[in-house]
Image 1: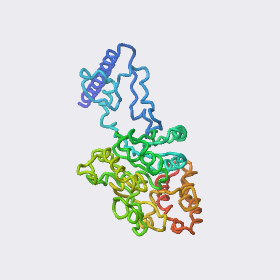
Image 2 (image 1 turned 90 degrees about the vertical axis):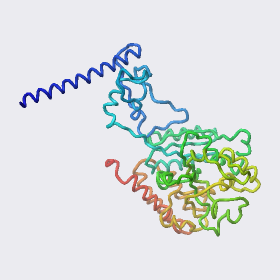
Image 3 (image 1 turned 30 degrees about the vertical axis):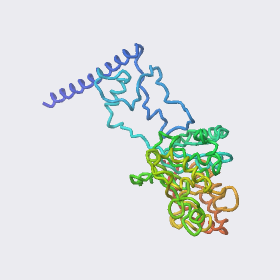
Length: 426
């Protein structure tokens, strides 16, 4: 009886193999017929393999996926294939790929990796500062990054050379954009506050395909993964469109509540150096305003606001944002204003007023120079903390130097979380 059972099992196995062979031959014949003859088709490389993992660096207009060697180029990506009887396949789908994709559909199901979109605007002498900011974002972040870099034309070549030299990391993509303003008012926007600063107001209108974006000034340093602030998007309720930091935590030394001659958000206003935005909502939303009873969309409200308040604003685009917006943590320039930062440590450091490049706030400068001089080798990043702490100890005669440990508390956690294991253990 067992002998007969073995024969039956063997026959079933042979039949199944024959069926597989018949289907594969049918797929090949369909492929050759649609492609006008020739040899057997080469199996297309899966898009998720050809893409180079977490993303290779490329500039504007980078080359697309490579064509399939020896193929007609008519086949869709492996990941786009789906199960269908071969006699019903669309002409632009390769039967061989779809057959195997269907066979392994459940074991090879690939979920796209979410990218974090980060934008910066750089003009004048801001190349080195911007590169240091981008480096701090790359070093600690977990998810892949997409950089949107708006820069003056003369800076594009330098940015491309520097970023391409980091291509071995394969953890980010980048796109370079020119500085652009609405043509009818370009000169007025460009001279508002600082050259190019108001470019950030137009990001929702320029990056129309981007759903959410983290905008940062060039003088920002990430001491924690970008993933941390990016995760706040999931905490937005159904009506919130952006998160920004308060301009001051202490109203007694706040600028807006003491000097502003225009509306501002909250008790002390908001700082536009770090803006986390749901740009899809920003583009769709109709904003209340004090110019008309009609609500206006983002692209329609900016110029009327400038015309009404241009004689009353001091900080340019930030003041315009304050007439609309909201919050997230910042700096301690006049003393220990950041109580939350004292308890938890600094996640994002904003070195405004040029403090990375002078001696007014040596603690800020010490952190900036440590990250600027740090290379991407794991050992160098692990050894970043001790020399930095020694430099910070030299700044205890200053307001921020007295609490220097808040500068390295989260930085130490970032290094520990990201680079705890040795290269051999990874």
